[in-house]
Length: 378
Ligand code: MET
Image 1 (cartoon, rainbow, N blue to C red):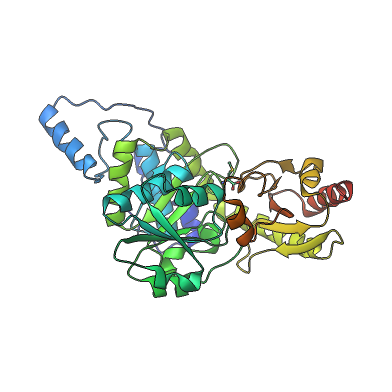
Image 2: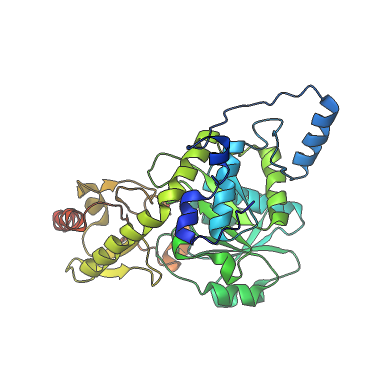
């Protein structure tokens, strides 16, 4: 799957998933919108369907559009390469990707999940509700290993975490929990800043909707992992139908090419905004990861809901990772669905505001933030 070139990671971000294009006489990757694939050899087609149902993907015609797609495969191959994984499996959303990970472990007789809070609110809710037949034990990173039983399927962690930007020592966690697989939600860090598989993680989850797409116009999810776990995920995707759309596959592949420059530029602006916010009289605490990144969250003495409503350049909206900056109030929106006590215990206070920093000029963003902070004084 991988080219085996000695080019740098930044160069591979541009070319991964496209190495065969020149030989095909193409420059942009083709978008295959087929929902079905013709075959006059029914017996051979039946054998291929069996193979796909077992979770294999030989790169050939997928029989049916729910099973696999050539454009989506390009994105999967590229993301696998950038995360340093054997394989990647793409889904219609980040939550569909997480659901497949959970269902795969339930099917393997390992329905017990160990969760480290905070996590994205709907991830927290999916684990806490047990909707997919899992059970969860919530722990601190230091307690994770002692919660393992012979039915533990996954340790789930997000670092830096949504929305508090709390960082977990992933190497210490994966060492302590081995051989139980650790799934790291790497949506906020992106492989530009952190590659969890190099720190002992078994699976890396992305809401591809965020930085991988990067323009707020494509929804998707992806898991980078071993060939073996990828087979389990494809088996789940085959029957549950959470396949990524081919146009989304195209857009996500296109997003990867600019991922390094987008993340580095937005991170520089976010770091500067974090420094300025820390000095602001209406800001009581700023959260910004040691790792860097383009997310900043902060606690404020002004009315946080009035603050979010008062921005004019920044967009008041959930989601993140777009070229334009977004701001939202986690306790009202992204983490609303969580248990209220757990939310407070996880550090998601009613005064916390989350900012996704885009590619605008830092001074324009600062002017907007400061006027909104002034406007929202209680
Ligand atoms: C429906 S809330 C949504 C989205 C996204 N995962 C976020 O953290 O902003």
